[in-house]
Image 1 (cartoon, rainbow, N blue to C red):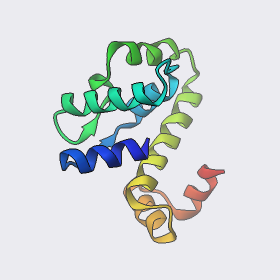
Image 2: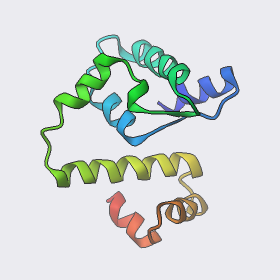
Image 3: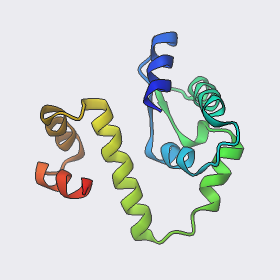
Image 4: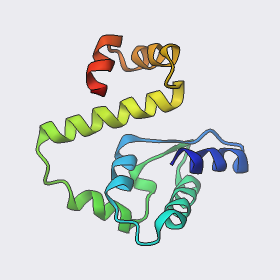
Length: 120
């Protein structure tokens, strides 16, 4: 996914990010067309998003339906998935170094120890 975003950043001179619900929908979709389909969906969604953040609303209906079909999870499971997606997004943004983790924890409003516990 990072390679696709990096390629689009270079191609269109944008700094794209993907919000957690869009990441969740992309992860739940079965991808019969494999990476080529994923790349096309992300590029298509990048054009539909109003700013540089790809939201679930910008995804095609077929991908969003995969998210709706999986909403049978418990609240605790959804909270956990959301936390993990947010943490991954922040670590992608700031880097997986100690300094990047410190910046990510500041952005998330949690302690560094909490981040390490959530990554386990």
